[in-house]
Image 1 (cartoon, rainbow, N blue to C red):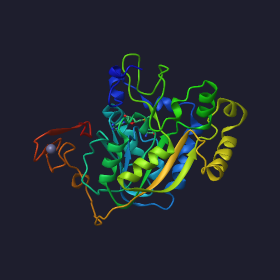
Image 2 (image 1 turned 90 degrees about the horizontal axis):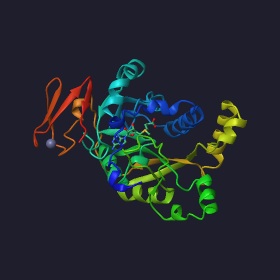
Image 3 (image 1 turned 180 degrees about the vertical axis):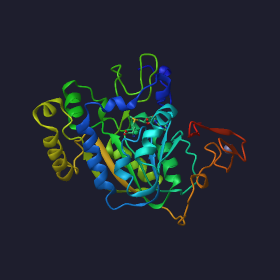
Length: 312
Ligand SMILES: C[S@@+](CC[C@H](N)C(=O)[O-])C[C@H]1O[C@@H](n2cnc3c(N)ncnc32)[C@H](O)[C@@H]1O
Ligand SMILES: [Zn+2]
């Protein structure tokens, strides 16, 4: 993949990519992730919860009952607009906001919990990304970070057989483009990276997160297993593997449950407008019905079909 063709942000709207289509015939992977998240979120609850790159709300059922005010942010305004009615029908307390995860339109310490699932492969600068998430989370909140594990067992075996050792260098590994990456097309390429557990843990630690738990996920993501076993059997073995094998790093997807270590006073925020700020300069906003204007840099942000557009 030539770097000059690559966009810095995976903007699904430029190619009208409907991400929900990706989940057709991937029920096992979806339910394996739900299983992992339910386990990690079991004892967590609070007021404001942020699903970063939450798209059409696939994971809402895993956190909706635990938090009073779930907020989905996503760079794809079209996805949020298209799914607004369905999400509001099934999960009425949810807010949908178009925003860039690198520049969140929220005050410091606004949220009591957050998660990022299947987004980090699009993130070129995880350190900046983690800092921004840490900023908007209150002290003692939990954060769940999922990422594609470049050193999963199948990838390691494949690399060894093909004598391609680039996978084993520390840090991000850019997946070779086979022409079908999420959000990419022939002439529009978006970032697509896999990471290793040690490197991600180190980066999260430097920002101020403390790792509380690690879970492997999608242990049986192999066509052979999918042909042999029924969905029920796959999920039975998945549950067993999540319980027994998560101390290894063999799974293709890794979930880390993190705690935010910082001092911050408890807030009792009632309205969305009370946590919104200008994503550029983080100063306060003046609201009219469908427009928010920054009191400092004067940047204007519009509400488009019920969705605030804070993308910068
Ligand atoms: C592969 S999808 C995953 C969606 C959802 N988290 C899930 O697991 O079902 C990646 C999502 O991340 C969003 N995204 C990518 N880069 C982003 C950024 N910089 N800021 C906000 N959203 C971003 C995309 O628009 C897309 O909806
Ligand atoms: Zn501003």
